[in-house]
Length: 280
Length: 151
Image 1: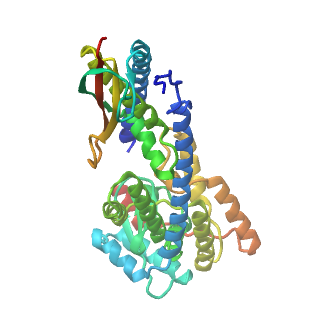
Image 2: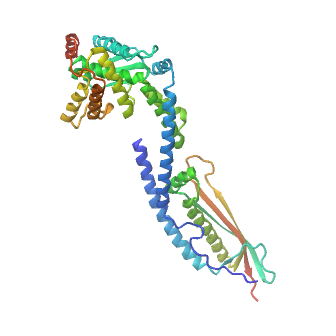
């Protein structure tokens, strides 16, 4: 018997592939996996969230924040318009709209959990007529009617939990953080289709209340102009309500389709409210 | 959020750069020393052949611990999600095994032995079970060094 130690060829126990190639391949496929899982979970969560009773949504919103609005003449005025629009939108019986007036120069408005709509002074100041203001309010009420805030929340929680599971953060911590943020009367991100769904409902209610559709696109025009004049500092409103051009177009189409009256007398904002804004 | 991401990317680049450099140098050293010690024969058979005239037999061993770099660990984490060959760890273990054998051979050489029989290896993970710890691998190679009797 002959004993010997032949030279062992290099690379029989390792693979010749470049590590960066493996890294790129793995990163790509894992990202694809994560995106798929998150979108499926997101869709499932949206589907389920829309079926959460509104009363529970209100409870959820109330758990994290003071939901009674500060009384002010401006708020009473906004609430009055909102009530008329809510009636025109035929909201389900248990759905109650609460308008909050935020004395802040931010030019924005948003709808959030529990039927709360927030209108900032900055937005109110830029409205040329009650009709334009009513379109904004109607749009935010439509978000609530279609349960968009709770759907956005459900999506946020699902995505957060999925990411948490991958990065090793406890699911409860993620869910708490997402729900906690949503509860504090902040803007939730809505999808493009949700925005146009809200626009359509809003317009129909506006026509019911005022008898014509005049002023319905004013808010988009106003903010487009402001956005153009100060491109470095675009108004908040444009970031929460994107694509004003397309929306003006689809509103015009909807008016034509339904044979609604595109022109009519604009209702002015009461002088008492304007005076109040000037004092602030 | 972004800070975390930047930290991860920097760690990945550092891990890749240093890890790759260390690995290349280590392989160069391994190949050179293996050539030098080609004469020290090592076998896994338990018993040396009957006709060998042995004057001395002693236990020799070589031990090595190598750490995983951040890049390898990150890639293995991704690999752990979808399965398959852990290519980044293959070179790590290959290096550790060969280094351990080389150290064992060096010890035998110092003793003036001619060959090593009954060579065995033990592999252990240093940070077994410890969460978020960069893992290290330990390989211990050992065998019986034999000195042949001069006639």
